Length: 403
Image: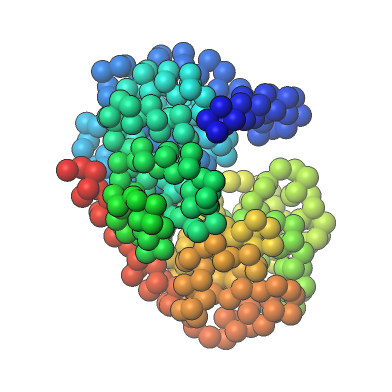
């Protein structure tokens, strides 16, 4: 199995290189790893002995960020190294000020794993949620470098718990301690003989709560919304956007702000075609005429987590695809959320529904009904209370790893 895995990694890298000539993400993925070991050597000193945080992408960075920042606050002299697997994380956070080095993670080959860990020489490694790289994990274990998984989430259908998953179960044995989100994850790990597990909860709650307490002020957005109730549609995809067309027409007294998941020109133009009387954020300016427009399309990244402060209801995209995006960012601001049918992998979505702070919809009729319900019933406080009741994961984790 190990040989097959390493062959798979080799061909994965080869395919990405072939795609790089016509795919932007593949190009960034490849370019960012070019000369990676020289980049690291030029940035770090072997005696730095940093704490290594690895994140798959931007979402995992935001999830693990509370741990990183509180650790840095408690141990100011600690050196921090961050790696990302995906361009969507690295390109947004490559200038994050608390890190002493930010890099793409070299692909998980035996050579890369050994070389990377020799150069970085981390004091400990902290991986967020569910990034499991066999070669990196084995080198860390062989060198007796503590490896922590934070905000871990495990499900019965994962390969670790299948009869043929022995190779991957052995990888988990390299982890020094698991901090998991729920009891199900703890029991699953216990069943395969792993008892170095604590239920600490999800660090995203700490992050979104902190963000809601100190949001970035967006005066142009505030002026656009004025006194009108506003629906914030975050991380939307085409299937989500099509559903919102009739809702906007039926509720002309409401403002609609759409912050799509993908902001490339073709997607933005598709949204404009759906909403011909809309305006892009980049064209908004301070004109009173522009502010009177009902629909605003956010054509940049980095604003969404602060946009929700101006909303009365949130629609979260992704539920008609592989899964919904971050519902907690909106809930932390005390606004109810609506999302599509593919939410069952997300415990917080199920909890918000149970707490009457969210509704899942499958079609236009259900969207209209959910919107009308939340526009007439004050349920936002239930969302905020749910977030507040689940904070504290960061402190639980740091109490263990800073012993």
